[in-house]
Image 1 (spheres, rainbow, N blue to C red):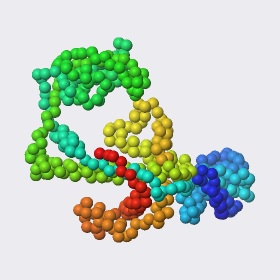
Image 2 (image 1 turned 90 degrees about the vertical axis):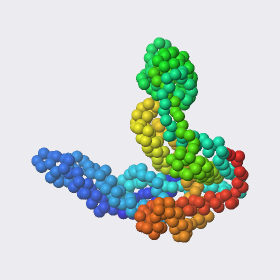
Image 3 (image 1 turned 90 degrees about the horizontal axis):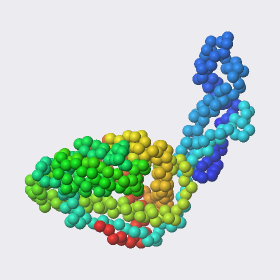
Image 4 (image 1 turned 120 degrees about the vertical axis):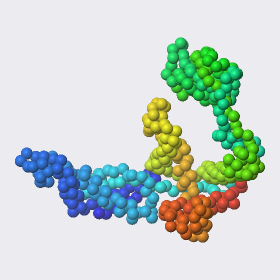
Length: 434
């Protein structure tokens, strides 16, 4: 087998593979042995028909396709291995035969997508927004109240009308032009008034109702409502209120603080602030790094092959599928509700996928351009930090590490050093944030 590789259009390479007559004969014979049991010819037992008889009976090229697949599977990985220093292959190739293919000239052509080079006009001396988020007292109190909500008691209300903040147990039937529509009815539905779970005006319409009262609430669906047959349409909901309850939050006192594993309210408040500040710091770093990449990407270009875009779209779709799964929703059911196929929905990720791939290419190029490396000491320090977080000694933790974990840590060190370099070599302008 001999082959030649040359660059082709849109970040692909054309691999022309020539096989010898002996390799071709061996592949055809192997294909015959693998497939002969599928064929029968009068006068022969099934699976025992000689190859030359089958080729006379069914045609000379009977096993050509299988033979070519066998040769490709045997030799293509070997070619990738030999070319890995020149090219990074990022997808499956498209295959075709040479124009003058014959038994004397066995030529297979593989056009394979490869990782493209990215051209970056400038990545230094740029004005780039820098984000620094702070934590306010109001945000601390909001977070504390959210935790108090988790421990709230539910108390039934019997002596007053419904008001915002109540949990109302209702039956309702929605009608358009006097006819009930699909999905517009429920019995025994719990609804927190003021949560904006229903269309605008519905929850406000329940406010003021008394127990066992029935009321018609006239509403108009939003123009951008997901069900197209209801978007912008008028409807009347007949609502019956059966039960009212309200949440009673626990007092913010020492008892509650101890439940949160703190000795005092002030210690608990400090713990909440510390958590929020760590979150704000992470958000500041992420948004600043995104800002840096956004600005550099404005001057960057690359011929990104479709295979890389498709792979990123597929990853986004998988993340969406996992997210829905945790909510007890199947992706197929969700797509059916939207009236879209998997491919149609995946196509919606293409623009973001292209941006993501370009950013990845920029990062790889700059790490290479600036010779950014992760030293053994830096990697060991990161490993020690991770070991400490799980209560283990570094050497003990190392023994349990997957090789991919160490590779991830090395990449993380390089990434941190790259963004430190980029911040030091650009004009970082602080944005007003909170």
